[in-house]
Length: 404
Image (cartoon, rainbow, N blue to C red; front, side, top):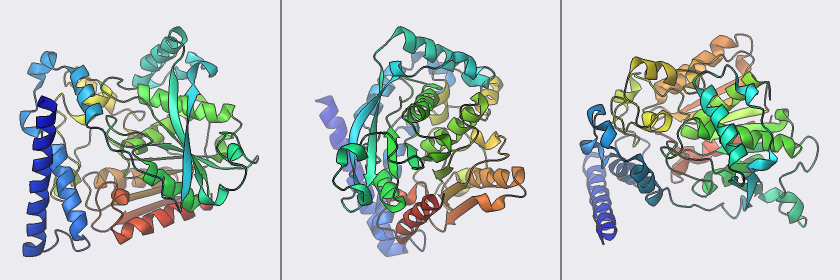
């Protein structure tokens, strides 16, 4: 009964937020020139949903009373809803990676900064607890849906030079799944003509860092085991998934598993988990992305990296490591990369800094990197299909991947 009441009050709050947003749109005009009514309503409703618990955010003094298991169960209860692959873009099938079939030498993680001990522990745990699977969905573009569907939906190369997308979904490392991102992965697959594997990596705070990085690593090694070459794998992701795609590549390069990949496609990537750049405040009135500050134990970055650990300079230093905040990485000889973001998102300055660092480390190869910053757009605007820029961005991403 309490759960039903909670959801009823939540829905009532969302309806009220939509009504206020509509009134504001017609009385004051759109908040940004390119915003449609539906866009503004959806932004305001999402902001309301994300900010509903901010007033009661605890401090580190109360950290021992926080039930992180309860938070994880709450996140699962309110997880992002499933979407569908557009029928004119392609189709998907679900499968799983059997972790026991993948051999990982923990010594490859030597020197991996704050991730090393956790990665070694995760390898040992998988050896002890056999039977773990990483679910995934394989999406095939409409152009491949001919007669031999078994071959198309088998995760092995159709030809020796086939490129494939390894997609890592967003959701702040606490929400999301391949199902929630089918609309996005379906469009990327359909417009690029490439198959796409989207994995269901483990979520925080139940599984904190580096569980997500390890699952991404296993998925990449799985693709190699299936016959794909590193140079034929495109790493892609949105928001936290963009962070994971970047961190994964830096880890792959560190371990020597892959010195390069086909390319990267990053949609509003979360590049800096400890950022204090101006866009966090400048764009707060536009973006829906919000959450407790880093000083709070419920800050998304802390729930992901070290739930239950108190704020300290040591913690900040660890979270600034490139395998956590990839903006601080060494990007020399980085693969071709497409970055898409909105100039009204709170992460705008972090994303711009990442792009500048790419150019800094590759002074003679600026042509390898494309940064598309869309006017008036907000975080992962690709989910707002009513906006013209969304179609433009998807088409551009498809073209980029076709050209790799």
